[in-house]
Length: 164
Ligand code: PNS
Picture: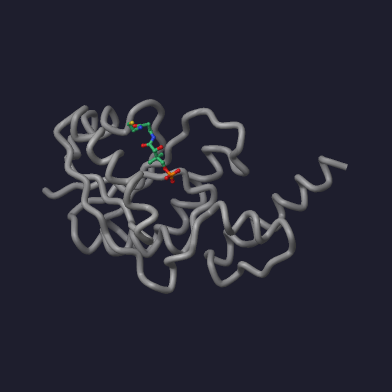
């Protein structure tokens, strides 16, 4: 059984993430989308919310499951018997950081990282950019599943209300 993990923060999941998950689901028998839930002040959505949105978004892929993890990704891989990490590469600018992570992870456990080139239409897409644009009223509806877009707009409005 060929298993792989697609790790990330997914705050929130974008069509770019789903492009990588869909392609990983064609390459591996089982794919676990692993949501890093290490503490960070800067998240817009809670770990449970991010996991919940991903579960809905990944419903079309029967061999994909979604889970959260704390601590090291390599510990999660070891616990699950997973030896492959799949990461999307959008541009050369991703490469330095991703190479460092891949080499660090390989030094911590018996895991290989497989890089999948992001489809060109998503090469600029990142959750951080989507949040920034949406905060200032940009239309990001084409970049996310419709239900995620609705939740994003609602959350930003709640945050806006809370800060007044
Ligand atoms: O979507 P992101 O923010 O690029 O995801 C980053 C994530 C969650 C994949 C990465 O930060 C991670 O693996 N965190 C867990 C801690 C860890 O294992 N770090 C790598 C060893 S240096």
